[in-house]
Amino acid sequence: MILMHQQRSGRIIPISSVTGQQGAFKGHIHYGSAKSSQLGFTQTLARTAAPYGVTVNAILPGII
Image (cartoon, rainbow, N blue to C red; front, side):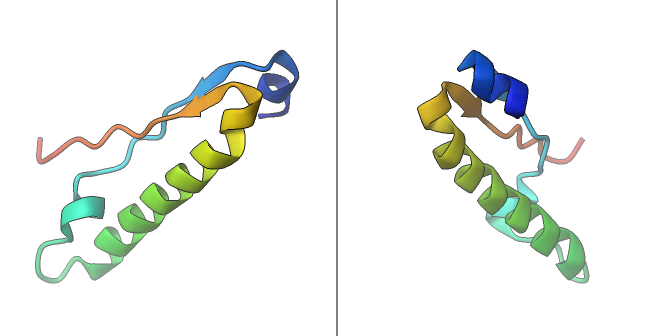
């Protein structure tokens, strides 16, 4: 992130899961919680990095 900050550009693309938005299946509370937290982190990082020209977007694949 420091290099991107200095360059005033960059892309961060974490891979999460649609479970972070929809909730987990029965018995997978730990997985759903982790993915939901990851999406919150991604949104906060996006707001923090935006003034420096760095974009942050998560990929949310479904069941594959």
